Image 1 (cartoon, rainbow, N blue to C red):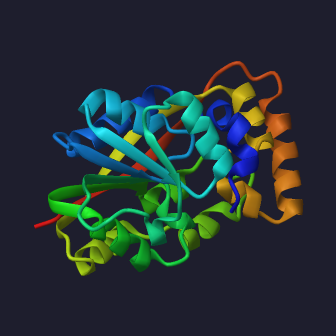
Image 2 (cartoon, rainbow, N blue to C red):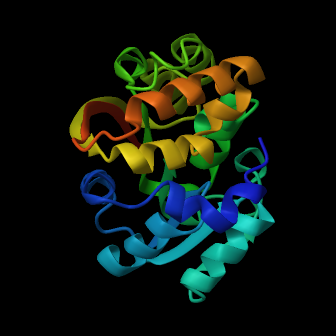
Amino acid sequence: MDFGPLAPRYDELRPAGPEWYELAELTLAELAGCRRLLDVGCGTGRLATLAADRLGARVWGIDPSAEMLEAARRRAPRIGWKQAHVERLPFRDGWFDGVHARLVLHLVERLDDALAEMARVLGRSGRVAVVSFDFEHFDRFHLNPYFPSLPDLDRARFPEPAAICAGLERAGLADARHRIVRQRVEVDPVRQVERVRGRYISSLHLLDPAEYAEGLAALERDMAGRTGAIETEQVWSLVTARRP
């Protein structure tokens, strides 16, 4: 999927609220002490910028979208932004002691190649942290009633945490494990409609047009005049591993 057209509104459609920062801090805790960090699929650069501030590390971010990288450069010119795909990282072996990827691996064509590249650029004792959704999340997603194809669509796209762990170990890393992170989230009904109109998650772009139109119309009807927040749960998977 080409994320370029989403770049101008990406941070608006997917704002960094308290839950984003909570998960980011948990992830950065796994990477504490890193001196050189690579953020894979950096998007508009939010995590990379936070990592530079929190860890005091030299940070590079890569993304295949030129438009996303332009937004990232405006956010933090001091970070090394590069246009690249994770399957072909433009860095030498062992250059980083930390590699991070958040909601990226469901977008790659060859999972093992992506994980092998992340492992290749990781130096001795370096660590990798991968954030994705646990499969339980797809069953609980609050938009499922409006877009019934979403659970099966996302289960087919996203790699299971066990598959990520196995791929990292095949790539030569050790102690691969994952933890589940649960977050209770309150969603403003007006903002939810705006975000769905903007197709704020990539899965909405893959729906049958008729299902998307019908689901959006139903969501608009249900949210019209609603004042109370939508309460839902996000179920994340945080996978970590290290270079022996």
